[in-house]
Length: 237
Image 1: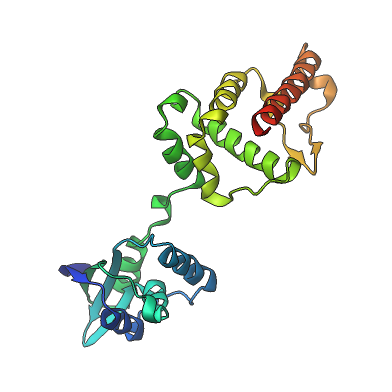
Image 2 (image 1 turned 45 degrees about the vertical axis):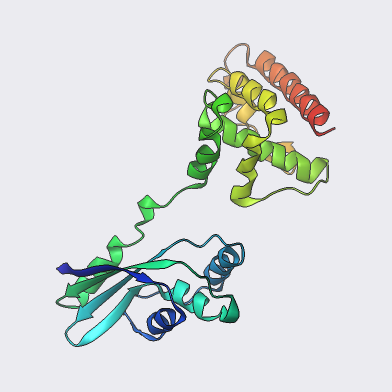
């Protein structure tokens, strides 16, 4: 089993970053990922770094790095751009064998604790009171649809990734997002039909198995979609 032996807050310095970079890695450590290093470097360049959580484990006479590989490597590449005023929260554990090392490693950055794209979208939506009544999934879909329209149809510079959801702050888009929240419901599943390369992919069930009135619903969906596009065009104009 593992046991916490020390927990401390340290000033982040080039010396500390170098110490962690050169520390003996645990057998559990992943290969350096260039994409993850770039992501951290981008945060550093934008001034978005926050205190790091680094962990070590003492196994007999060995002191192993459990967490902090990518961040310490990135920091050592900053040269004269090393951030000032940041801290490192360092936890050190005592372990009895390498099985304990693996068990400790599993507790750090647990997959189910990660923030999903939906979590980020709701974070941006949640601070805009005017949009609180819009279902989360629909608001996310509205933002992504607007971004697609701006990028593909209007050919305008458009945010990507998590930055898309900042558009919840644009009041001019609120009527469309609210309207879409009212439009999408359990009674309008046709509006959520998947689209690939501009062509609708219909459900796998035969047309004859659709309930009575589904043809009318499809026509209404098409009319509503055209209406949405007209509204979006007027907003972008």
